[in-house]
Amino acid sequence: MSGIAAIVNGGPNASSIIDEMINIIRHRGPDCCEKLCDEWIALGHARLHTLGRHPRSDQSLIIQNESLAVVLDGEIYNYKELKRTLTSYPYRTERNAEIIIAAYQKWGTKCLHHFEGMFSFILYDYKRRIVFAARDHFGIKPLYYTEQGSKLLMASEVKSLLTQMGRVEANNSAIIEYWLTSCAEHRRETFFQGVQQLMPGEAFTYSGNTMSLFRYYDLKDHVYVDYDMSEERANENFLEVLTICVAESLQSVEKAGVLYSGGLDSSSLIACTNRLSNNILIQAFTSISNDSNPDEILIFKSMLQEFGVPEKFCNTEFNDADAVLRRSMWHLEMPFPLSSLCYDILSRTALDDGIVILLHGQAGGAVQAGGLFQYPCYLLDLFLKGNWASFLQGMKAWRPKGKGGALWQFSRALARHWAPTIYHRYKAQKNVLLKYFNQDLLSQVEFRDKLYDDPFNSVLENVTYVSMYATKQPRLLRVLDRFGQAYAREVRMAYMDHRLVEFLWSVPIHHKIQEGVQKLLVKNSMKGLIPEFSLKAPKNSFMQEHLSSQTKTLMEQEFKMILSSPSARQRGIYNPELFLQLRQPSEMNLKTLSKIGQIELWHQIFIDTNPQEASAFGVCP
Image (cartoon, rainbow, N blue to C red; front, side, top):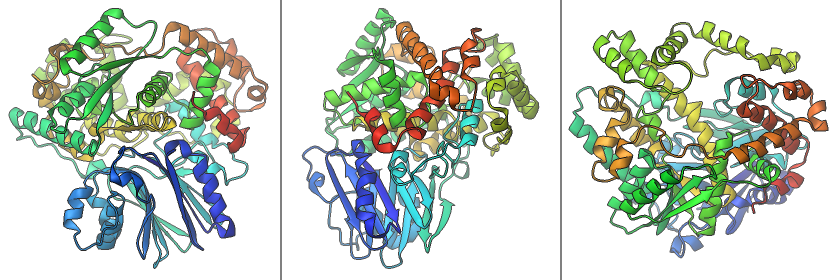
């Protein structure tokens, strides 16, 4: 677990520059820090020891030989296997970062096709004077960059780049698109003008002041449906692949935590960990609030007792909403769902308990077609293919949440599919809050009907693909990375391993959903391994409300204060007084108030304040 940074063409001050860049993200790696400088490039690395007293803990952070050097954030899970393949390389350390150098010497940039894990890295080729940087398949680990004149700066977090950028301008196009779509991670451009992110499955080389971007992995190029797969083979292979992914994410780890929701995905992680023979100590962390149902807490305790796993319940009550919001914005660098504040408490508690590695079941629902948003898409596929018997059975069994019944929800899905342009423009016109924005700024935003083109013939597959790259998963990846790293914890996600994602994609849909029941694959394969109650519980039946009504009231008051501030009145993006006058729930609920309030808060922290002063907001209690 690390914070990495680099500057190319930094000049005679490169050494002090890399110090500034690393120091501001030192929370990502508070145990040790190193740098490497020559006349062209400076590399910096801050690391947290995740291996306790393991011999690898005391070895150099920046791995180098006579011609190459690399800094790595994350883990190459299959480094031992690659080491057995790349036997001619003279290894000097036990760090898995060295396998990047060995693989690059053998395969060049095509080495990326051999790596499994969660990683971002920056490699420097001395002899050819080339920088090679990459990000893992689904972007679990972040990497940002900016070009400032002849200088190229790269880092794990944007704030590291801001230390060298002078006055930063807001990227209004990205901000307004976030307001319209609630998405901020789907585009290369960020909220910060001139700062870009390396996208998932992407890499670049940089030489002679020229950057060459390329994509080495895209899910759509690696998946297919194996219609001949039997239910028995699907269940067996799922359990085998998931156990391998969990085992690799826990290599050399003596104890770990599981962010436990009580659902199937986090339960399956505990079950697979229990199947391993390396005696890893596991502890479950669950968020609760003052409004949590005591009966559900008792159910959680009994389920974890069946697993033989000790539990820690973390109360998400906040007394100082201002400090919590400013600290969270400083670390996350863009707006975030308020419900994600639970990860601040969970990570802090893991720090207090001395647990560095945390497992999370992120994407488990999406890749199994188990999300609530995916069921109407499943029905739509049946409808469009004329599979009337299964369609009618599915409609009859469906009990959707939210406005309207099954027929209303299906009609909306059908409208989105058949007339996306008309549907989305109708939705945009109904967004009454748009009239309160600066119309000149709105006119600068290019209207897009879709965040991504549809690469598949299946509605369900297209929605899942967009979820992996543009909406739900990238948003939660940022939340988990930043809240974890704020307390020097690392969150690992077996369900985001591309091998597991590709396998689950290949499983025919009738092994995943039948007659209104989703996640059949995990339910069938985990019988006898996880508590029966969890297998039979309906989707989202456990403590989903992470914030109490009292905390929500505090948040609402805080956002109104933010929007009433002098800076908000002078910002020129929107009219805060008109926002605050809105009282109709359909126009201004807490979610909406939070979105616009966080946009103003982001400006206050990153535009109105220099990075060194703003870093005081990020101090964790």
